[in-house]
Amino acid sequence: MTIYLDSAIISEAQTAKELGWVKGITTNPTLLSKTDLPVETTLKELAKLTNGPVFYQLISSELDEMVKEGRKAFEIIGYQTVLKIPATIVGFQAVTRLSPEINCSVTAIYSPAQAAVAKEAGAKYAIAYVNRATKLLGDGIALVREMASVLANSSTEILAASIKSPEEAAASLQAGAHHLTLPLSMLQAMATDRLSLQTVEDFNKNGRGISY
Ligand SMILES: O=C[C@H](O)COP(=O)(O)O
Image 1 (cartoon, rainbow, N blue to C red):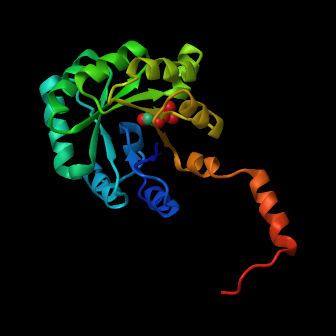
Image 2: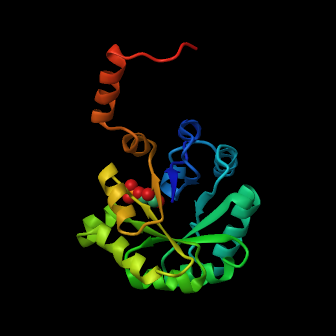
C-alpha cells in the first residue's frame, strides 16, 4: 500500500515530505490551477520533493495530442512520471499507445467495466473517485469493491482518490484499494485521533523516561 499527496502546492509537498510516510504526489488540472507557477516548474519542483511517482493528468482530448502531451510530461518529470489519462474511448487508446513507454493510470473510473478496459489497455493504476462516486452513484466504496473483484490477479492496482474522511480512506483500503491519494489536511487527519493524544498525555503526565 502507498499513500500519496493530492496537491500541486509546493509548500504542501514539502510538508508531506517531512511527514516521511507519504510516497508520491498526484495532481490534476484543477490542482495545477491553484498555483501561479508555470506548470513545468511545478512538476519539476514536486518531483524534487518525493522519491516516488508524480502523477500528471493529460488535458488534450485528441489521440495524437495526448500522446505528445504524455511524452512531454515524461521529458519534464522523468522516470517518476505516471500519466493520468481519463476513462474515455480516446483515453483508453492513449493508454494503449503510451503504457509501453510511460507508466499510465486511468482516472475518473466510475464502473468496474471501465476498470477492466484500463487493465487491458495496460494501465498500472485504475483511479476511483470514491467520494464523487458516492455522491453520483450512491456508494463509492462499493465501486472500489467491484473494481477490486474485476482486477483480482491482474497487475493493475486501484488508487482511491477523492477521499473526504479518514473513515472513507480506511473503507477504501478494506474494499480492495491498493493505494490512496489525499489532500494534506486528510493526511494529517488520518494520522490523528483524539484518544491517542489523550492516552499519550496520560502516560507523560507522571511518567519517566531517559535523559538525552
Ligand atoms: O484528482 C483526483 C482528486 O482526488 C479528486 O478529488 P476531488 O473529488 O476532491 O476533486
